[in-house]
Image 1 (spheres, rainbow, N blue to C red):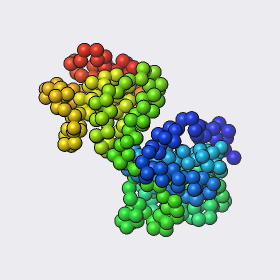
Image 2: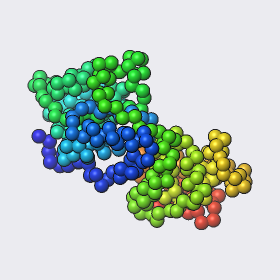
Image 3: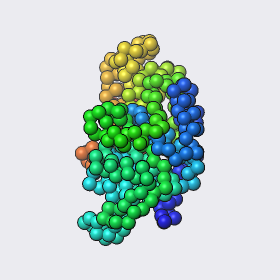
Image 4: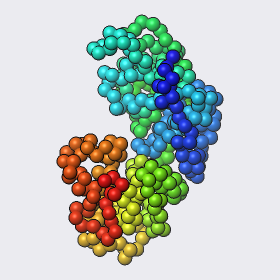
Length: 347
């Protein structure tokens, strides 16, 4: 039995997820995914979610969990690419005292933590060949043993796997077991890249602007029509994650003009721009703006990854803490636009 406080930490509040109109949008491909999810809600069949990085695979997994008959049980996730192979087995199946150095007591694995709920395995192809075999056994009969143990245990969970690569190619290359592939691909959801659902961008932006403005305690910025048109022209290689980072910059910087100039530069570089060049800054201004905004973007991404810990961010960027504070106060390197106050929220 999992401790009550630990159990609560794996609960998913549906209110924390975007609404269906945001998650699935209006394109036929995404609406088909919504229909597929309806078909599997009452079953325990494994689900495979495939899509490029940043397309929202975990959001889809959480959405499926909250609408299933397991919604009151834990949702537990494991990124198979983020944990060393030597530790992945104990993370998944747990271990017993003495199983390895430092194992002074028994430890629950994620399968046991997810009891009666959902286990989400991201980047499944990064799991070692040997561990794939143990996972296959669990998927076949629901049984497993902890590392260093002999007692056979049972897991009562649904498994959702995800990958940003084509798993059929992973089978062909020998990195993914063929028998495991056929076990996890019973129901497959192929998520669309954002470039294939551009009609949804204005609505997604509106949701992100409200969400991030609350998170950062800033006013909700208004995006002008030119910016909205540019947002639909860019192909967003980073998909929803890249769009969310862009909106975060819009909320924090509060400078739609500078961000529009950067977006114009990106769109123009692809030859897809239908916005008049006379709307752009001069070449010198555009270059300077793009450089300073790119630097601000890099700093912001590291800050987000470190949960806004500025000291850890300075260490990761290999700069002094004072240098980072200076960059946050003046991301333009001493050249500010009138009214541009840098990153006041982050200071």
